[in-house]
Image 1 (cartoon, rainbow, N blue to C red):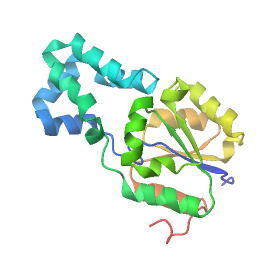
Image 2 (tube, rainbow, N blue to C red):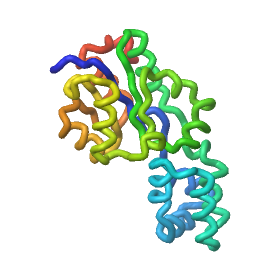
Image 3 (cartoon, rainbow, N blue to C red):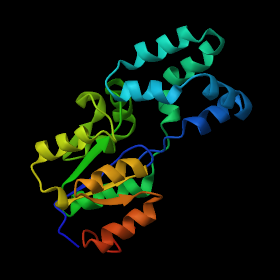
Length: 207
């Protein structure tokens, strides 16, 4: 296994759970949620925010354009931090364990400018990365190859020395095609095992 010079974490569903459908099921019920998500492409709206569009303006515009769903769409704005929760505590421990071992740890995440600012005070570990690559600030989202190129150019490390965890196979595939070491995240224990296998953490430190 090649040496690892930096570990890169996705944030949504790796460090913080991101399940909008589950959240809206709990707020408006599964039937109404399904009808809303069928009627409105809320994930495209979120992609626009993650690409750099202003969070409040984008959500309010969507609410205005869909008066039958206005109140429900505004929940996406007004209760966003409740939707982006909870933290995945074991993953947070892994982040901190790597840093304690002196391993550089980066974030590479699809995240809006304003939403990241909302999340930071709620999740202090978001301030603890050595480098943060936030799509809203970069103007491009995963899995566009450009965002990976920008990471490589900024950090100056050989792509083969980067170990990247993400919960989406399409995001992982582009990183792997560029020579990055990758891990498809499906839970923190598997990620812990991968970090141990890479010689970055001991079994004890990875608990």
